[in-house]
Length: 108
Image (cartoon, rainbow, N blue to C red; front, side, top):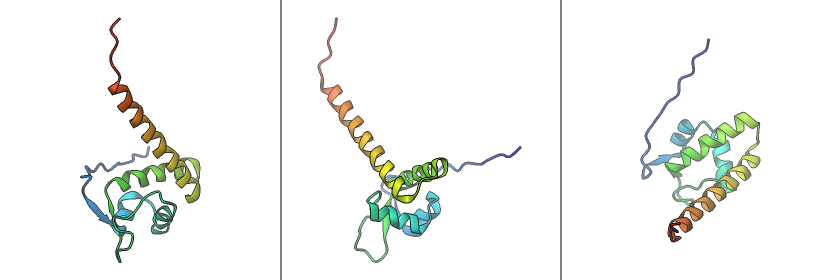
């Protein structure tokens, strides 16, 4: 029987990671990471900086990309498209929650 170990790390959303740290923590290669930047899936804190750095929420996006890549054998371009759609769904759900919270409650 094979036992897999998972690493759980609490991330501070204000934390910033170098490109190398992001590659190490996310499971994507540097080439894939650069392609995700090109496709707009993630963005460096400063695109024009000599050394890119990324906010902590990029790790979650890239780990999701790894799971999708491994489970569905998707290429980087396909992953970028799926992640963009997932982000849009998240945005729409947040808008719906906000609008629902503003609606008066009817008691009946």
